[in-house]
Image (tube, rainbow, N blue to C red; front, side, top):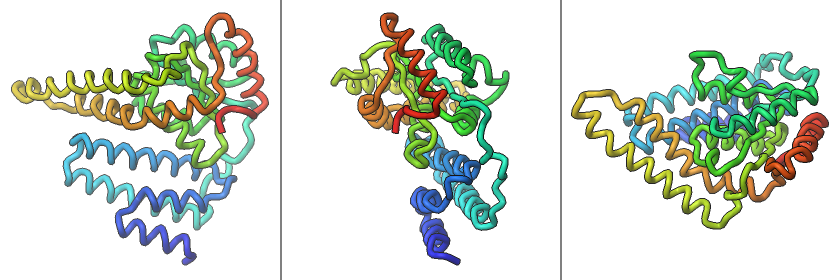
Length: 284
C-alpha cells in the first residue's frame, strides 16, 4: 500500500472525507477522465450532504448514514484507480467540442441566440430546453452535462445570479476547473450589475428575504401535517447560493467575460465560437 493509499484510508477513518477526496484527486492521472468526473461528482455530493445538515434538511442519523455511504464510494473510487479498471473509451478525443449552456429561464431568448451561434460553428450544445428528458432530475442533468462536455458557458445576468440552479451549475463548473484545469468556464453577460461593489450585499438581502418567506411556511405545513421536502430542497439551494455567491462573483470579476448586450453581441458570439472551437481560452 503506497503513501497516498495510507493517507486516504486514515482520512476516511477520521471522517475527513473532503480532505481524502483531495488527496485522491492529486493521484488521478490526466488520461483517467471518467474517474476524475466521478470524483468531481462525489465531491459535489459531499457538499450537498454538508449543506443539508447545516439547514436541518438531514437528521443527525441520516447525515451519519450519508457520510458512511460517501466513505464507501470514495474507497471504491480509490480501488478503481488502483486496479486500472476505468473505461478507456472516455479518453478518446471527441470529434467536435461540446458545451453545457447554463442560464436562467427568463434569459431563454438570449441563451437560444448563443446556442444557435455555437451550433452554427459546429459545436455541440447541451441545454435543458433541448437535452433534458421529461421527468429527469434537474440536479443529475446538471452534473451529467458538466461532466460530458468540454466547457460550461454561463449566461450571466442579475436574475441568473439570484437563481439557485444557475448558482449550483456555476459552482460545480468552477470546482471542476479548479480540480483538473481541463474543462473551461466562459461567462457571457447581459448586464454588468455583478460588477457593482454592492451587488453581493443586495443579492444576499434578496436571498435572505426568500429564506424568511420559506421559514414562515414551515409552521403552516406542520399545522396541516404536510411533508416539508419541497421547502427543504429550496432552502438548501438558497443556502448554497448564499454561501457560494462571493466565490462566484470573484471568479467572474477576475476572468474575461464576453459582452452579449446588443452593440457587442455579434462580435462576442464570433469570438466565443472561435474560442470553443479552438479548445482554447476561457477561465483558467
